[in-house]
Image 1 (cartoon, helix red, strand yellow):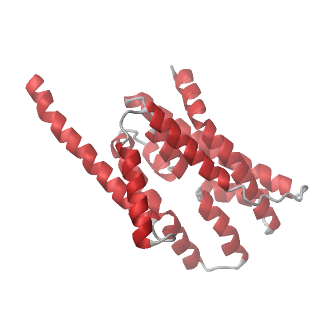
Image 2 (cartoon, helix red, strand yellow):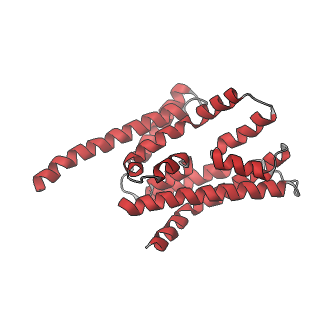
Image 3 (cartoon, rainbow, N blue to C red):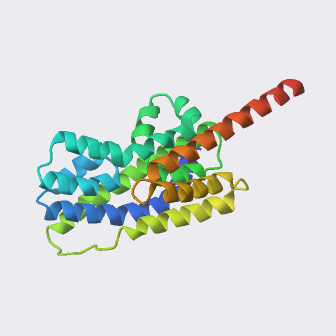
Amino acid sequence: MKKEIFKKAFVKSLPIMCSYLFVSMAYGIMMEEAGFGWYDSLFISMTVYTGAFQFLLITLLSSNASMITIALAALLMNSRQTFYSLTFVHEFRSMGKRMLYMIHTMTDETYAVNLALTEQGAQKEDMMFLIAALSRCYWMIGAVAGGMLGQILPVRFQGIDFCMTALFIIIFIDQWEKTKDHVPAFTGFIAAVICLLVFGERNFMLPALAASSGILVLKREYRQTETAPKEKQDG
């Protein structure tokens, strides 16, 4: 059973692997060009583990930015991920010691893949954990490989970040086809468009995530309160 769950988790993580390996290799190469070794890329990937900020961190470290500047930049760039865990509050609470690891490794990509999972209970929790662990390994392997390649190959990876956009499109289509409930997709799309018009291109992400996450949490709680009286009546 564990082998079967691992196989399913690996298949689900393949889109993440195709994106993470190339993007993290570009990150490793850029770190090498900035004067940092592959071991620096590995250490940062193990502790920071947020792709967008890791690229920014190269510039911050190269310019000798203060720790306060780095900390504030990390908080502002990754504050959106605070809302991701709200969707999986019940799953995380029942995962015991693995809960903190799940919070640390929750990224845009793992969040999207986890939303598309159809499994329930312990099987879903195991798959979420394995997807998070595999995805983290993909990124660290790519970062180390990029750092090593940067020492011998003058490779330019301009425009490679677009593969992250392609990844989200693939995951969105996969989720749309596998579920009959398209409310989360419509909620996220409408919230993003409204916040983009109101707050602008640079500031729309955080309010859009807050709005969509809040609506989905309220929707989930409403469904639970509706089904509870029915279950009592049936009992």
